[in-house]
Length: 357
Ligand code: NAD
Ligand code: IPM
Ligand code: MN
Image 1: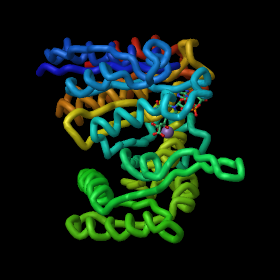
Image 2: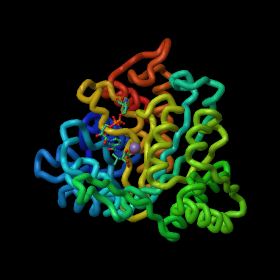
Image 3: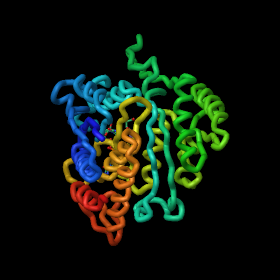
């Protein structure tokens, strides 16, 4: 097949990990005779520095004309002082919204060899396989009114609004139930229905959606309890469906069950062009040192093959190459352990490349 892939490396470690994933996709293209055409464009702080805005029109146009988008990360201390509408993070929200990517899939599973890389005990995390389904274009990230306003007394007021419509909840619910059908058939809907009306509606709609999926169990959990249960007994979860902000927070927590946030990939889907990115950020504390873990990004490229192009065999080849590389003892610093071989970002990418079948 032929596919156009937009490559948006962004800032910080984004610039180091994305080339590793491109390398792997290129090798897949050669091995399996697909033509992947890569076009890079600016996003985030790097775009601000060049053209003054975080999401240049050309970048968005490129994404829309592509078959899929591979993204690294955006943001960093350099741009933290900017007004909100001009900050790197707006680019991420902007591109998700503009492409209509309302569903963000964040799978957290622990590779057998990494069980001891987690800060949690082996018996707690062994065998975990969780899919966080995060609503991505609604909720408090996008709800209005929003902004910072001056009050007559000279004080200021910062406002964000959590809003969900029935339809927004229904469509993310369906994504979660469809995914659960192919897994262990259990959806846990995360909410704060004891306090928030938007969550009350969320819970009601999830109950409605479940009626079309009698083969899938639906459980409800309050988000504070969910945060606790994720570290107490994470194996109880199969698919967790969350609003935008709860999904953001709980997926970082779930990442630590796998050993490192550098392990967690994601797929943002729901419209014509999907976007694939690691869940972590630009990691300014380790950027430029060739020590960032590229596995989350390489696995995101794997999700692209599966979700955007339906290339299941090729996606599985990436997965197997990651497993083999970990089995051989290769580790980046974030997942290092006894009797392992600590390598840099590029060396990890190279090792995965060599292990591709
Ligand atoms: P972060 O995810 O960038 O980093 C959190 C911690 O995890 C850091 O200690 C970092 O070194 C480590 N880490 C992250 N990725 C890693 C990797 N691949 N390998 C090894 N260690 C890794 O979160 P943060 O520090 O809160 O945010 C930094 C910047 O990134 C901020 O500007 C934030 O807004 C932005 N951000 C962007 C995205 C994105 O682009 N999707 C996501 C989260 C944060
Ligand atoms: C993520 C990030 C983003 C989010 C930020 C950087 C806008 O944390 O992709 O998880 O909150 O969605
Ligand atoms: Mn996040």
